Image 1 (cartoon, rainbow, N blue to C red):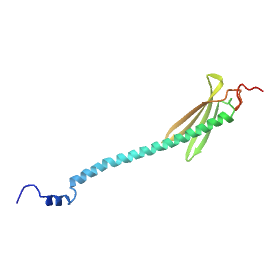
Image 2 (image 1 turned 180 degrees about the horizontal axis):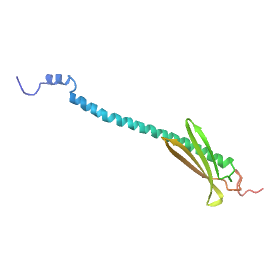
Image 3 (image 1 turned 135 degrees about the vertical axis):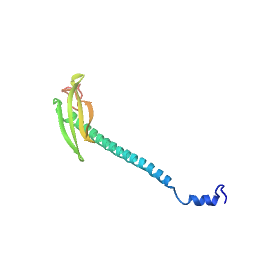
Image 4 (image 1 turned 120 degrees about the vertical axis):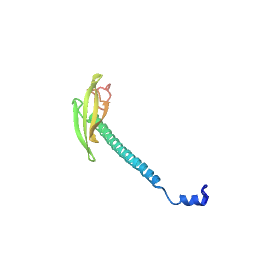
Length: 144
């Protein structure tokens, strides 16, 4: 019998029989490493998406309460607060008034706090209010 290289037909028959035990174990080991890493990456991406959505909702609420505080409320009060529920999340907001450069020019800051992943997060938005003594919608140079 010849001990030389296998002929093409015999080599082709040998390849059609399947994978060896070593190749199968190597593939299973590779999958055992890759699958948990992919699942963890998807979990992290899902949490990041949740945080992003909650931050955008909090920013929208902050802008809304800041606009309302600028237009409709008494600027002499130093703080206002409340809670708004969106979905299953409570967003607690506070609007504070501080003097900016001059006592007659108020800076209004809205801060919205919310829980995400068991930790408290917040979003802050600030703007300048109408000068004290000015009426909203009128210029300070108008006189009556």
